[in-house]
Length: 376
Image 1: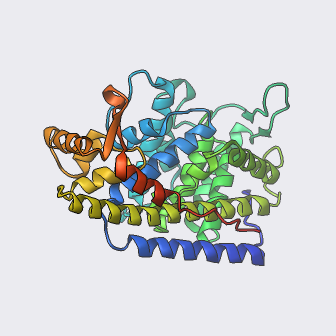
Image 2: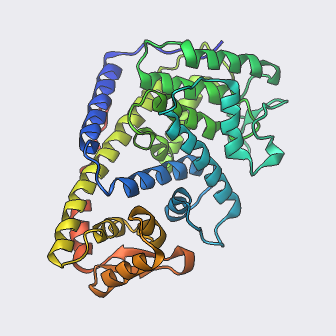
Image 3: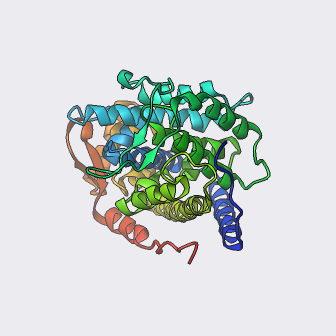
């Protein structure tokens, strides 16, 4: 038996409608391809990867995460274990992103185990891809009783078979965001693996949305929101505990969990909406400035990335199909006209906005509004 979809109330229906409106607005903003699209998507993926792994205690900088997403080098002194966790999670999330366009796709236990293997292959001691053979409990912290006790290992294969069948055929009349939330809750409650269950459950949440093409997965994931602050992460665990009931009790009411996820989707959608609108404005200003100074129009993408401190020589060269020397010439020119300045050294060298471009970018980025509470 799985945890079941709760009865939604009028407040949930209103929040769902508002989420759909926000997604529609994002679709409208993204209809016309812009050259800033690639760095923005890369940044969103990196934020999702960082957020999901931060919850589990694997912390890397956004800069290192962007390097992993871009396929660039990371600093040799970065935490190897954390980088391996982030790299594995990015590999699984990349599969999820591409799965939105697969002509042939079926939810299977092997699929979920393969995603788990991608995430945990750096930890062979945790039997990546294989179900646990013994009991599992989630600790509540030093000196506290277990926060959650999973079902017996002998029950796991049957529960996973039931979950996969539900993913294929269950509650298909329910709103997609609700189905994604329930997939998340059921997988993390079954807790089928020795480690990585939280990351896998958040990844499955995103996969359910991706398969229905709710928007590109990097715009739909709530993983950044969940790991954005200790408050958000604490609320995440509280909502899980409230619905789980301390052990595998599928008869428990799951309304608090679904409401928590809908709120997170709403707030994350507001955040991404602001970023996309800011990106539009930043791009227009970058094009205007490069034209005014007689610079090649491709340097606008360099200014765009520098505005948020994400400009690197390797990613700029890849985005604009430039050689290493061409990219360096452009960046040196932008430094000479005092629109960017370098920071860091070696593989961590990146560029920040400077001078009049820093002032223009700061004005655009400061105009974001406070996020609105969906369930106010």
